[in-house]
Image 1 (cartoon, helix red, strand yellow):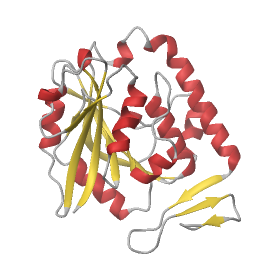
Image 2 (cartoon, helix red, strand yellow):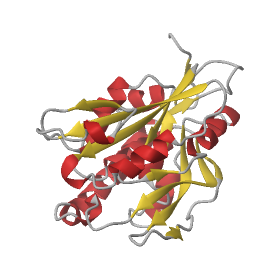
Image 3 (cartoon, rainbow, N blue to C red):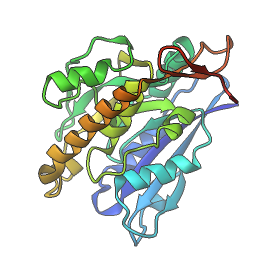
Image 4 (tube, rainbow, N blue to C red):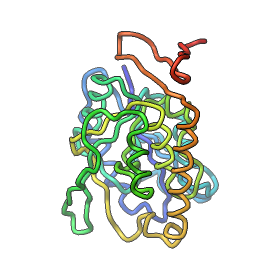
Length: 266
């Protein structure tokens, strides 16, 4: 049985919609031969969410560590070959993981971002028009787009999915107070091929208590994006590239610049 891991970083004071998130994970229609593990990692000194996440592998930090550290602690527990991030207030549509799995099986990519609709407070959905064309994404394409537009990225890092080993190799989510998901997307998309899908598979909930509406976020948003831009430029300067063969046709390898290729185990 193959496994896909869904990672949710949660914090009780703002986890108002976690039960709906849990229902969406439980409703996933997986392809034959696949299983889903839901890893809920609870931030904070006083855990209070275990009874809201039935079916999840729930663990507690025991201290307030922030969202990046919390996601990375969940990543350390993941056993799946693919990881899908899911915030504690967002919703997966029933076909989400099956669609995601099919993309990784069909295309030699290390990461994918599926399309999302905004879920508004009144329960209605608002489409989120894509800025980047759907289909394969070449290494560096996402970050060049952002650099040309003052640090605005064309993809939503909150819905990031990746091959687990690749995400681990690149350090997981970046250890910054905000935009940690952007830092992870920057590294993956600069060094590896990805996929941007037209299929709407998840809903991004808009509500007053979300992180981007907190008093902390506005003061640090510019810093988070500046760090992401710095990371993209630094990675580009190394000339590193990571490649992956189609499933069943070969093994993973790492390109170090234009003339050197490291095969697994070298």
